[in-house]
Image 1 (cartoon, one colour):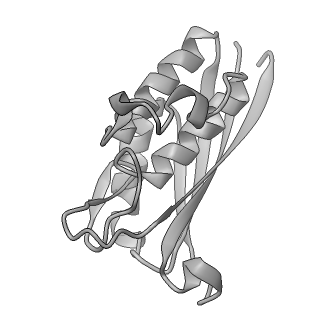
Image 2: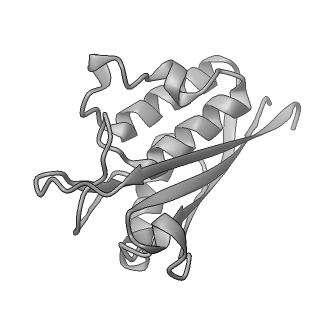
Length: 158
């Protein structure tokens, strides 16, 4: 398989009080409050981006897509993920797989998990697993103040 690397990504966003803000996770729109962020605040896509950049040694999401840059205001995070995958491939890496865990009391992912997985797989070109985790009412996430996502990726050079 050649050289192999693992990357780890993390993202967290608070729920927005703006009734016009959409909730987007892995490019899939959910009912409920949206997330506060410079882009569309897709925590799943952001965690995947950070994991991919880390594995390929290309910095982090804040360096590549800074929230101080108006070009990324309200950006589609799945498009940013596609750009990241292209950058990783340009460095000679192929994505082996992605594993994402969303940590939240809500929304429930199970009814849309396959759709999330399919959207991510279409962009990264590799198998993806998406799971939901609850924190049983503990802390800010348990109080439903926001949600977090962790992602792990494997990349390899053929």
